[in-house]
Image (cartoon, rainbow, N blue to C red):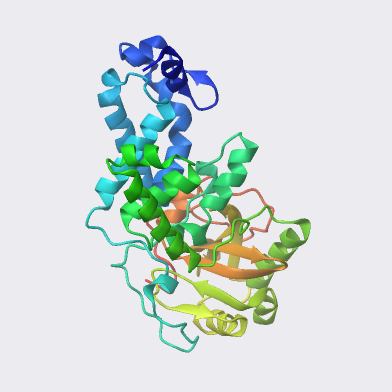
Length: 366
């Protein structure tokens, strides 16, 4: 290796140079300083690989544990960032061995359900989970745009259709922009195998009709529509809700296995199967997967409100084209949403500081 190459390889992304003592592996106290800046993007990477924010957090911890153990042997032949991504990718692949993919109800292959059909719940399926934007926030505006596109719910759901190694290849090549040779080295494979896997992965994703600009920051008009959406649930105004959905909108709500297509069909589902009535449903805004999201709270007999489900919305133009309503109590805690809302809570009021713990029972779905 030439002196010039060695100097290039000792650069971490962003122009920072790996310190000489780090390359020698004799300055363990510098490990946090050298590796902590990449924790959030590694969480996004593990989330794309697994489709679970909870699994991703555990796998990032395992990545850092393995990196610490191997730290003394790190010689700076690649950037710290690349080194960590190699470890994280292989940690994920090991964790995914023998595990089922994480789908949304649409991905189970059954046709759209009618609103009148009985609800069927399957708690055995390891469902796809949304991720809070706050866990992945970065100060780099360009990274914000890129991350929003590559963590959007539809993209992560499509990734789950790929075998784990194809998933890793596509993420490393298309999201992280690694060269095929770099991916082959990280996965202990060949460049030809990497290129073949990427081609097969692209063919699968093309069937999902994903576009590069699926997610963008809501316009003022879209924000106004979302305010009306929240008010429509408060009033349980089915006609208003239907008017804000695209004609072919999709509603899915894991762990219930059915999915529902069509604005009128979705309206009938909410009208007949949602246990709440007028002035029973309050919504607290948040962000998930780069998309608008709301924690929906249901009124209790005592008058206050408790977590019911977390909605993640895809907005196309001036309407909502997809709603993922996640009935997982843990998500309210993950998103830092309150455990309860007082009976007099109004949109815009300060949010209670007591965060949900994830151990409540969803009203009407015990």
